[in-house]
Amino acid sequence: MPKGGKKGGHKGRMRTYTSPEEIDAQMKAEKERKKKEEEEGAAVNDNQSEDKLTASGSGDSDDEGSEKRKGVEGLIEIENPNRVAQKAKKITDIELEGPKQLSRREREEIEKQKAKERYMKMHLAGKTDQAKADLARLAIIRKQREEAARKKEEERKAKEAAQAVATAAK
Image 1 (spheres, one colour):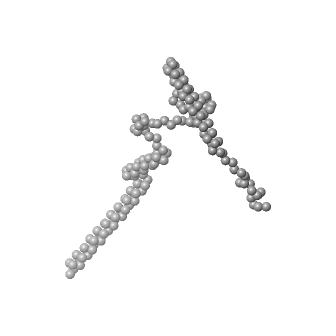
Image 2: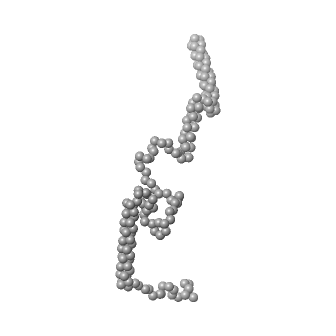
């Protein structure tokens, strides 16, 4: 038996085509239906506008400013809290000068910079442990350099004295 199962299948069926007369008849019927709907819609709109004019200024009409709804949607008032209509904001309504809400990363970055500045101020004042260690190291180095300079000076004086004695002896 071949791999595809039974020989043939749905592809060998006879295709049916609609005749041009049937297509023309369908198009005419659809045009007539649309004309009827437009006439009925215009009549309903005329009645609503007359009702609005005769009404005593009450704005209780459900269809004011809304689109024509299909099926049962027009009969049932639906309030979906998750469906929010997009409102266009005016430039005058936007607050540029008000306090902005920073993201967590931005807040952390600002806090890090402020902490670094505080640390540098305390370091320059010598109040941090690292600054104290640096100052102690510098003091030790100064003492060593002073001692080395003193020794050099003494050696230089001793050398000059030895030269003076040597020149005097000649």
